[in-house]
Image: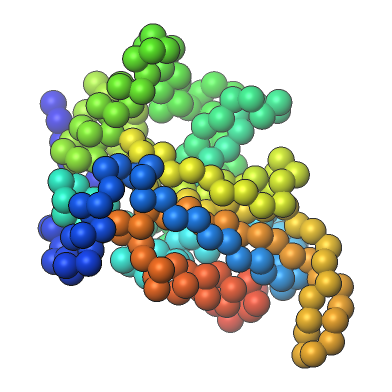
Length: 276
């Protein structure tokens, strides 16, 4: 039996430009736009350090940036949308998908969704991720087990077609059933990947067409670099935040607002997320 996959509003009214954008490209891979911003991560790292000391929870830059992704969707709800049959629908919840390595060698990749991430603190996100990762890495997560089992049964030459069919059913038709072999609304509305954990200073992650996610945030590795503060050059810790967006949903103006939000949070996390 099929039920609704994602929680969506009714179709939204769209401007003529938006209709032209939706009609200009075929799928989520075609209208990809890339951007990045370098930010001083000094204040963010201090904030993370205080969180660890106060809560005892292992909080990392990935958790911090996941919360930023949720906050971006909260402040700019136009991002948290999905395209179906030429119409744009608003997501009713803010769910963040984290790409994670499921083995120590980093050869097996998977991901997990934090539901209602905008309503959760950074330490709550960290705690939930830690619990879910323990299940995945120990082979006890039912969703991860089902997905691996289903993929292993599909011949390599048919994987692309199978994934496209899955995406069509779950996101174009907005239908879900346990028979599909994956979790309901399995990819959320925004993705976060920490390429910095691989020692990479900056990279753009691709949009994945069958997920219908219009925004992917990549987090680079921390690096020492000169920065200018109050007109004085001094040592700083920089990080590159990459963004890959679906231009049919997110235009240049909205992308610039995303960039400003990211910079504002990194510059003063206590003012944006609350004091510790």
